[in-house]
Length: 339
Image 1 (cartoon, rainbow, N blue to C red):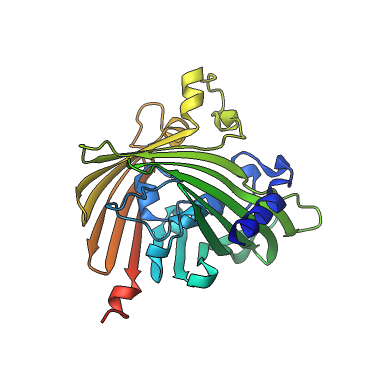
Image 2 (spheres, helix red, strand yellow):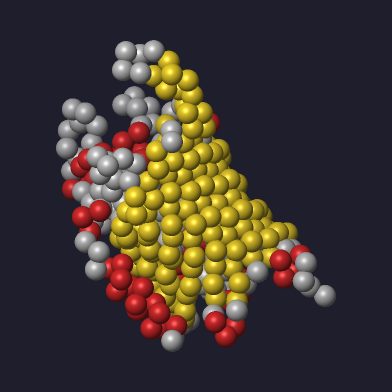
């Protein structure tokens, strides 16, 4: 029955035309592509895989990126994430996983982005006062394991509010992961943000969804305390739209690397890891000509104390400075329900 449900969900969303896939600011609801956790930020962003090795630290919110990663071992885990972004923009996520046994593993999540107060002006430049803008999404997840494969689906309703105008969309993520039976190796495939608009800001608006296809790899050599991560994203899109004005067209290698992010974890202990990441698209498009300012680089760490896990990350987009991302996960089984 579970396999049939996932198959129906996959069929419903995959037949939607990929015309919604757009580059950068051409798409609405781009907040759905922000990093959902400090782990993802520290590993370069947009990482769609995580290790499922029995000795690894699992992330209870990774299913919000790839729906295949909700798991019965994470039942009754609560995760809260907060990102203080540029220009006083605030972004947060909440997730909860529960194993209903007979009905399988289900998860609930919320994504919220607040742009703060913005000033409004008329066509002549006269101030009209302030207005607010927020985006948020409610996400429901279900996953299932078949042999060495994990399959999952997210159904989400996303809403964007801008100065009294609102757009709403119904979207789905379809994800799968292959878990090697003996090695610490995981490969994933993700179709993200497939769906359609339920309503648009105005009758003349033409909002589009940030549909994407991503591939991911996670691998740890057997005798090495280091785990490698790589993600391929914007597969349906040509990143030429990100070339800066009057910039010479990049070579083939540069174009390829603009679709890749890289990350690594230094596994110091089961309770403390250090993470680093690199995003070439951010580096190549947001660095200044004379100085990079660390654009595209990120780092962070994981600290686990019994039922509590803290993740911190620092990412850099520009020479003007970086931003911090904090995630806290709590195992309610140990914190509240343990005997």
